[in-house]
Amino acid sequence: MAFPFLGFCAAVDALGVRAYPRLSRREAVLALMDIFGAPYAHHHSFSEVADWDRAEGFEQFWECNESRRGFGICGRLAPIQGHQVGSR
Image (cartoon, rainbow, N blue to C red; front, side, top):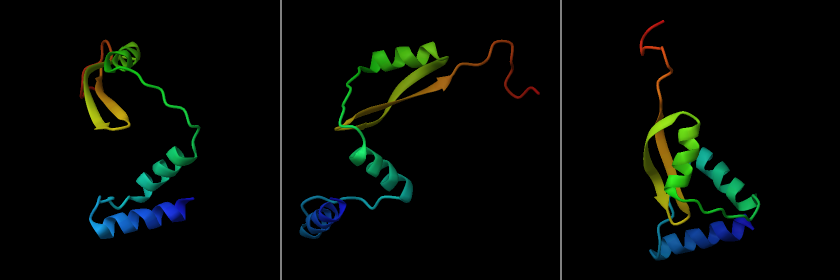
């Protein structure tokens, strides 16, 4: 299945229809996991995902990695109570 798709991508690149970027080894492994993973798609809102992360101690959320397949969410972990940054 992968070889015909790679041929298709090479042909589309050569024709200039769409440019498929070269993938790093890590990106290729993640792409294979997506291809061979279970065919389920779960759609969640930004606020729903932010609520899950907030419950785990994160704060200051922003959307990242937005694409046609969804979005990523980034945030900062809240400081630990009674711990000062840079203290040992």
